[in-house]
Structure formats: structure tokens, C-alpha cells
Image (tube, rainbow, N blue to C red):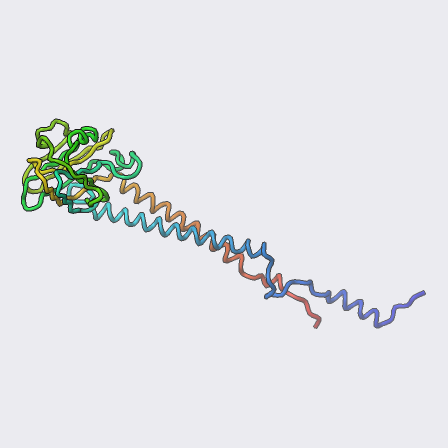
Amino acid sequence: MSRTTATDGAGLLDEVAFPHPKAYPPRGAPRSEASRRRRVTPLVAGGILCTVALVLLAGGAAALWKDRMGRDAKGFVSFGTTELRTGQYAVVGDVRGDGPRWLYGSTVMGQARVWATAHGEQPLFIGIARTDDVVRYLRGAGYATIDSFEVRADTTHPGEAPSRAPSQESIWATSVQGTGPQTLLWEPRPGDWRIVFMNPDAGADVEVHGDLSAELPVLPWLAGGLLVIGAATGLTGAWVLGRAARRRRPSTQAHATYDKP
């Protein structure tokens, strides 16, 4: 029969009373690649969301400022002024600019306004007609095309003088003529249209100082939408970053050890 010595009994008591500490990884031990990826991904996602939120909020603030501070007494928002000069007989521009057609409709653009004056108190003619009619009227004549609110040498088409003065044509959907500042209002409508600046006598050397404005009824809705979406995106990004930060805190309980007294 085997006998248990006092020493063996003491060792057994020590094992029961003071178990060996579990093999937790040291605090500074490198984590696995999967663990690092799980911790980094929320930080990246939260940072991207916060960055997008700042862009949206900045755009909404700019649109709100333009709507509140950029309108004149008649409710028009200016796109800027420009100087147009050509040695030819007309300056021609598309009424509809770059982008989809719905961008220039009554819901987004609203009523448009062209304000212009000729150089040196000379009389000025401004008219809007269908593109095909303008092409027929200026066939063989010299003119310059507006590109990005300017006239350049590469957008100038040399030619002869038009056969008739612009006021003698019946192609214009709307037109104004006179000395000093001239204002032309335009309601968006279907089709392709062009605006034409000319001297009333169809003479050469057209010089125009002009301004393009529009009502932009969509502007306050655009500002509000950008601000709301930006705020929601920012709150989401902050929540994601907050959760990621809490998960990165080490748990003292997980690293606790038991030592014998």
C-alpha cells in the first residue's frame, strides 16, 4: 500500500489553493493580423465618414450663404460678370450650358436674367432664338462663340457681315435693344436656344460687359439637404470612432494573474 507523505500533501494543498495563472498574452505582445484589421477598419471608416461630413457641411454652408447673402433685391443670384470682345459681327452663346438638361429647367434654374451694356455708351442688341434659326441667320457671317464666359481666338469664326440687321429678323423669341444697360429675362423652355449679342446695325467690333443671373429656386433646398445629410454623416462617423476607441482599451481583468502569497 502506498503512503502519502507530508510533503506530497502540502504540494497538493498548494495546487488547490493557488492554481497556476492562465497563459494570458503579455500586454505588449503583438496581436494577430486579423485582430489588427478588425481594430483598424472602424477607425478608417469613421475617419472617412467624418471627412465626407465636413465636405457636405461646407457645401451646405456655402449654398446657404449664397441663398441668403448672394441674392439681389429682385431675388436673382449672379453667376458672375464678364467682358466679351470680338472684331467680328456677333457674340453667340448657348442658353443651356454644360450638364444635363434638367439642370437648366424651371425647377432648378428658374427664370434667367441677362444684364449687359455695350462699350462706350454704344447701342446694343440682345436676342434669344432657336439654334437652327441663329445658324441660318449667321451663315457666312463672322462671329465669336462664348466658352466658359469668355471669347477666345479659337472660338472665333471669321466671315462677312450679316445680310440684315438683327432687329429685322423675326426669329427672336425675346430681344431687347438700346443704349446703356439692357436687361433680358428668359423663362426656360424645351429646345436648343442661343443668345446673340450684336450691334443694332450689324456692324463689326462687338464689345459687351455682361452679367448672368438666375432665380435658383432649388438653392435653399440644396443647402438644407446638404446640412442635414452632413450632420447625420458626421454623427455616424463620430459614433463609429467612439466604438473603435472603446474597443482599443485593454481589459485589466483579462490580464490579471494570481500569485502565491
